[in-house]
Amino acid sequence: MVRRKIFWKLLNHLQKKEFSIVTGARQTGKSTILRQIEDHCRENSLPVVFLNLENKTILSELNQSPVNLLKFLPESEQRVVALVDEIQYLDDPSNFLKFLYDEYSAKLKIIASGSSAFYIDSRFADSLAGRKRLFHLYTCSFDEYLELTGKTTLFEELANIRSRPDYKSTQTELLRIEWEKYMLYGGYPAVVTEPDLKEKIYRLREIRDSFVKRDILESGVQNETAFYKLFQLLASQTGNLINVNELSSSLQIKNETVDNYLSILRKCFHISLIKPYFNNLRKELTKMQKVYIMDTGMRNCLLNNFQPIGVRTDKGELWENSVFRLLTETNEPDEIRYWRTTAGNEVDFVLTHYDQPLAVEAKFDKQQVKPEKYKVFASNYPMIRLSFFWLEPFDESFFRRIV
Image 1 (cartoon, one colour):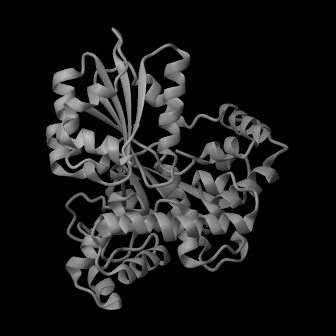
Image 2 (cartoon, rainbow, N blue to C red):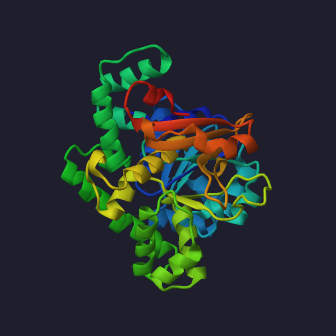
């Protein structure tokens, strides 16, 4: 059985007093992770219960009172693990978790999953401070993609490349083929495990049309057509600055509506908006955000473009979005910035959580790398190391450059 990286993080957090909250877009595998935790608990004789809040009977019980959760727990002198799937369906999930933590955390460990953005609610942040740990589940990383598709040899080869700086691989071309497939179809588990390329596209469209629609309905969106058009526009503008006025004009909706839709797309983990990095220099941008789609397969689905990488007119934008997605594996999206001046000098990404910040510039081809173009950035930020990340030429160093 393939274990996603987040499984091991949750396992390490199992004995902690804090509750564990797993968040992420629909269809990223949150329920599967919780079921795997349940299996682990049973195999190790740990008392556990799984509660799916799509079950209206269970939901009604828990909405009546958080204490009703205790009715579902097995009798045990040990601390019981309660796995609560789709916790956002509760009327007040923040109060539910706060009450149970304050009153019963000595004998109860909750691991909850939620697709929606209840956890961004200020009540959640305030009332659960010190009581919870958030775990973000994105669509599959490339490593997880190789494991889920049964490419064990390539997965092991990847480990060799990363652990041995001078190692030369005989599997580079096979890794490239898989990488490009991963860029085209993304990392939703149901898409990754589907071997037929046409079926992959069908599954992506199903996620777009069925599961994103649920986000729309639950978020109270009134103009579904405009919402989808906005999502498509953002997919075509990945890596670009967001101009709410232009989007409002194109969609013929109010600025406030655009802001609301952007917030919903971000809260439901479909897009990420990254802020500028600046040092109070008058000519640096300080407000406008850049947009990226959180799964490249979904981006290509929205654009209805699954052409091979080499012939695409948007390969640079797709590559930049892929680099952003790679950076989220080791950096929280809020820790990723971009840098740009009003004169147009730009660096794609600045990673702010390191002791020494790191800047990353994405170029599809190494020949496009021109270090002299970044003199303004280097002179203003000499303490920040600038790294270039390219797809062509593809060799072992590609996998060693991943931050």
